[in-house]
Image (cartoon, rainbow, N blue to C red; front, side, top):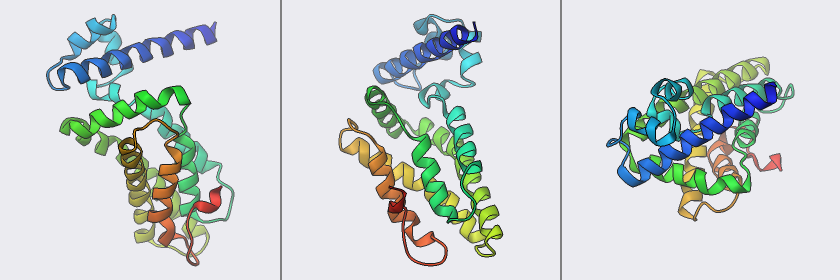
Length: 206
């Protein structure tokens, strides 16, 4: 029973997301109301808001679930090791997509890049990832007897920025393959100088 209900919820969410993405691409983000989007998706206005607090959230997929997974990955990170490397590994893990999802993901990224309101919304939503990464880096660095508030803030800010840069490069190359190699390369470039105790990067994650 629970599995069937979960599938129904996922199906409804996916239908709303698809309808919103297609409509935003065809008519523009600012030109469409939530009421219109609900009608196009075949749901009521209240149902729309049950799944998405604002119409912009329909572009970002299950970002709240992704944030929860990011927290969980960091919570399960082995003791010791470098905080920046753990953050990079967790970001790569939660940005894993199936081959059939690549095209839709690329369309979302392209839409966000074109719409200032979505860029602003992305900045607000991604701030939670920065905070989680910073908090983790601060706690782990303190446990190692090193690091600083500046170090923790740098890990949080630069790790999320690296993911954004990686996705930009991925979209520019067509967005048809796994984006993680692009994210890994960007994380390696950005976080390499933040590894505690000496030079290095995140390539050792394999």
